[in-house]
Length: 297
Image (cartoon, rainbow, N blue to C red; front, side, top):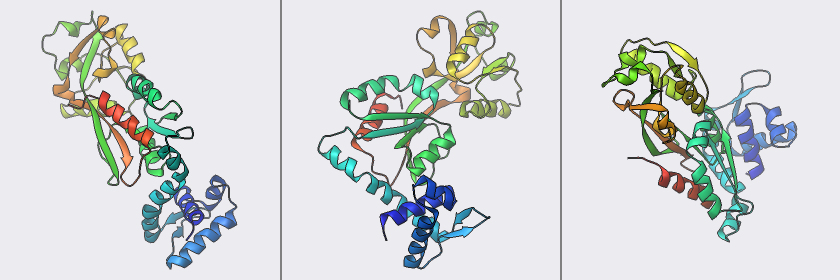
């Protein structure tokens, strides 16, 4: 069994297509086919089933081999880099992080500054992805780890919560809701809301809470990005529910803020990485900086 055979097998398993797998690994399709056949002959099992003219899917035995081979191939590919890191050389090191734009804007800038001081020669790659894409990238080894919020954690993943913050109501200081001493969900539902788009985890949570109380609300605007939400709330176009870390002390000069965690709970953010993957020293340092700067209590 050779490493190139396993790399070819993992490529076919990922893309479910021999032609695409060959192109992605810079091999010919006959080469990939021979690699798979050699593995099947050595193991005495069938690794793929055809489900169409071009598409294949893993057999049960193929799924077992994928779980075993994926972390081994990842570790093998990083031997040279690990060796240089052990010597204190980080020129070729790369830390790849998959996360959301909001985390990139509101959580990571100071951490990146601290990290760059410790590892000036290490390349940082930070990719903006949605939740499903983050999980997939960590699963496939395309990202060292992800930073996101998860309700359900895959069994083969670690999920380390580092931040818990209040969910708050924000409004223009002239908005009528500001005059209420106790603000309820019914009070919030009475006014137009400015919210993230329906596929965002925050929006799903907000919708769920209103559904539980059989309350309907009016959408004034759906936007991507919390800066836009704050801008239009400040203009008096509507009110919103967002995570507290999005609102700075400067924002509070123009926005009314009310803790609504008793209804919407606290927002949790965590670091997602594979259980069987050994992270590089720079990646581990970055994670520790995130956790050190978080608010998990």
